[in-house]
Length: 296
Image (cartoon, rainbow, N blue to C red):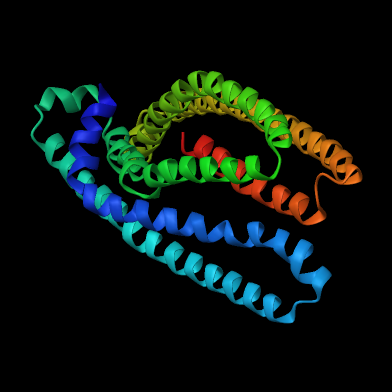
């Protein structure tokens, strides 16, 4: 329900801008695939035939793709990231205006420092909706699909050997997200409470000293910091498990490619250029998947 509301409230009104950002992402991704795909022609056709004209042509095409990729990267940041920061600024104003309309009883039950922290930090999450996060999520998915198509054309068996570990990694990430997301959500609340308590303590330090309550305030702050530490420890453990599983599964896939690719090259069914092109394209398939995990 919350995502539908966010889509209607923030994404749909900016559909033209996000659509343009998606087009730029696709152009950037397509231009990034040029160099790894062209490597097979370099090693299999141009170098063996000593084709200097073909070499210069290949360099021109790759250079043009690099230029296009750099221009689109700048345009995406300028278009989406700046717009996301503008939206964050507007939302902070809206939240502050909403707070000022609440009754006095609300402020009696909430620390002012905690409210300040939440006004300034909670709205940061929308940058993944209007900023590059949402568009990169879609663009990364399409890039991975395009990479898979090119990989299948080179070697279906090697592609399958890569996809199996990646599918296992995707399942691990989905399970981990269900555990990590509540922890991060809770961290925002704890952080706001600790900052709010510290702000009020420093603001009322004269009163605290007058009543000799320094030890009480220190104990309260230590308790909050300990809660924050326990929360961070849980999230670090989960993210470390995700990272180690990705290293193991991706490394396993790489080892399989070395073995299968070496066998096919010795058998003459796979050329050196095709193997190099496959390994480079593999990075373009895996990178968006890791990026999507970070966005998630």
